[in-house]
Image (tube, rainbow, N blue to C red; front, side):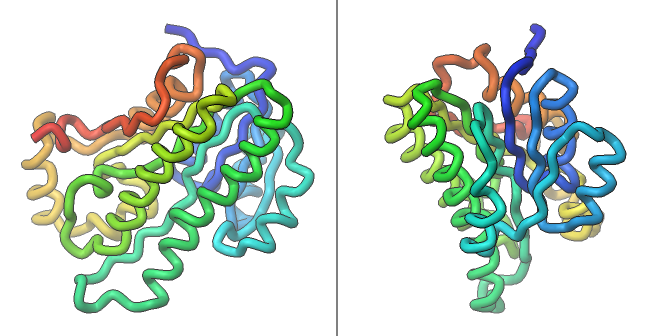
Length: 244
């Protein structure tokens, strides 16, 4: 099944590393005009070396005013991938206000804000569009030491559904992808304990973690017209973890 995004304009947040970076590159390789957003200039610089025709925007999405300023000239957008996230881990009794506020500011408020900016343009042009939010299996299952992360991803799932409800009449589809563990730079520090890894893999029927490409392929499908009637979906990419 060939998917092309020729003539489409795409925005990917958290595009400096991991899933976001791979998604931005895949979209560009599929013909889209891509704007990559991340808060680390060095990551954007290396991304532009890899793909010089990606447009780069450096901003911390946790800063509402800075995001407004950075994206005010974004222009027309057809596709949005809300991938930016942070994952502060701590036992429930040790969660701090700063951890809570930072995670919700980036993982939920940042996604909402960028989607508002993009969807307003989609609505005014009347051309529809597709938005994919990168959620997690942690939105639907409790994971030890992931109190705040799980809470933000549960919020993101419901944000996805409400967006799908309210934006659907304008032919703007909104879906989420919910991966199991993917060993990106962010995940490596959180999944370095062999016993923790063994326990998690034992709960996945396929007995393995997802690869970045597994997630990217699902994102591309949901962005594309191949999924034209998918709206409000939370799609597990988890080897069966959520089914059991």
